[in-house]
Image (cartoon, rainbow over all chains, first blue to last red):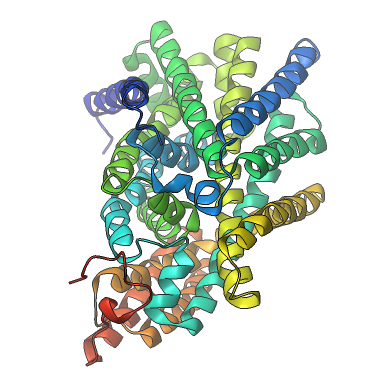
Length: 40
Length: 478
């Protein structure tokens, strides 16, 4: 039995979208904390 | 991959530019780190963005960017999933980070916890395993740097290895934890952008059906649901990751450095961010067939696909990703290991009356000594040295339960912790040689678990945190 094409598509789509969102989230958090003077 | 002449000058400029960039950024960010708490723990005030990014960056090693594609091309879909389970270590450490700050509000290292909870004998075993693991990881990263920059861009091994190790030593030496955490953020973003860019470039040229069909036709086993070795590797990777993060001072020092109340969120977020990265990197490898890439060696499948996709730009992109992956782990290892040696070896064994200023003054010498030792050993370029890191799997696996039980279970005993670490390591190593690498951590963890649980069940004298160590800043522990 093989992994279905649909499952494969979901896996790759979620991972690529996830890494893209991670970039946005990290930069957004950095900017917000920098503005609040709470970076470190 | 073999014709590097066209890009040679760009690669050397890039190597020099990246090295200089990290040194300048690191020293600038760490310019105010004068006293011990500031240099080692950023005054225990790191925010969510930098705290999450440093955990992600440290956990993304050259293995993540190059071994994840290799896992995908050898173990298929399960291989990608197996590698991504290493993120469970970060996720499961999230509640521990909170507990660690509660139990040790003034703590510096993981050694502090083990000594206070279990005493000197368990501390000695723990320190031996911990320093052995940290140094072999550092050496394997240094060697990987030399080998990878040579394979990817033709940079001679000695130059590539020396450049990466030297750069990390210099900025960690002058900037301390602030330099490490600050550069980690930039390196995380660069790595994520690089991996995502490669993934979307593949999707721009082919749709996922073509990639799936290419794999199904040429390597059908890679999409099988039942691939026993791959399924075993899921558990092994998960436990190796959990063990590594639970014991290593790299992660404990961050738990102490992150602002109170944020530790669990930083590690949780880091785990979520890290989870899809090996799958995205593995996808690059699975597109090798549809791209018509001739895979000459499995460990270079990622770079081969990048070059096929983007030509010389691909070489440069992979070069930058690998450099960042290595630097973000090497700097963290240097900082955390020097912290461990300074606080647990120098202060506790050789100079118990040392003030914070004396420990702070000792740290640069320790960083230089560790960096120099790693550089000398890496210079021999002996591949069997790097393989030693794999032996650490059962050792770190055997520490999971002593740490967990020590943090949460009052009845956990010193004898159980010591025997759990020793028996787990020994029997795990026997399994490594008799069965294979993919069960070693599993066996080590299981044996240790049994020993720790049994010894706790028969113990009638619960441990009381409220009677141990400096309790002035500690809230009452229940």
